[in-house]
Image (cartoon, rainbow, N blue to C red):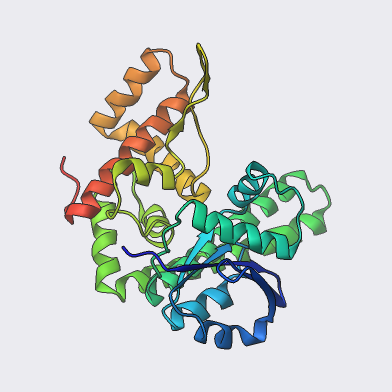
Length: 306
């Protein structure tokens, strides 16, 4: 892949973006309403921006419409890069400059745009997760409530949330089966142990790299790669961190189920526990093995081999 000749760092706010042009060493501020015009004038550039919980979507849509390369980075990683290079101040213009330098120094590769169908699936899955969190919160409030009217009110809200969750799951299933590629991938994933409809939908929506990268990269993206913590003669414990937390949670639950009913994964978990590993560590290891299996299945377009 030939990387773009120039890098633009973009810091995103609700009403505007701050842009730093690395080649020209110039800064500018552009209103959110002018994003399409901004994207139209770009050529042979890589736009580096932070994932900001949704505020970046209008810019990403404008860039994709014009075929402009872009990469979204984790805000924590951008801040750590700034500290590592001695830039401690934090303003919108400074952040844009840091992002541009980060893109050039680390030779960041452009993101692969998602298809409209996968984007819609991602929004539906995110909304379902919202409803699950709200249901959990209301259930906890119900357990603590003592007043009869309050308990009845919470019970009514819970009924509504569960109804909406069921409707969302119907929409998710329909969105998957409307696209033959997604439907085929779902059938492939669900043939694996522990992978139900909810987990399969999360993987399709939040892990589009499945089957396109190697086993180490997919484990890292899923937040299941163990990271060393060594210094000198000391060998610290390995920890999993980073990656996509919702994918890690879904795979942890899938591994918990699979390690109870699948003979191979059950034996793997038991072996780790017999060696003195804590239960959670053993299940995380099973989850890492499971995502490796799923990655190979998606790559080869085959179902799980028992």
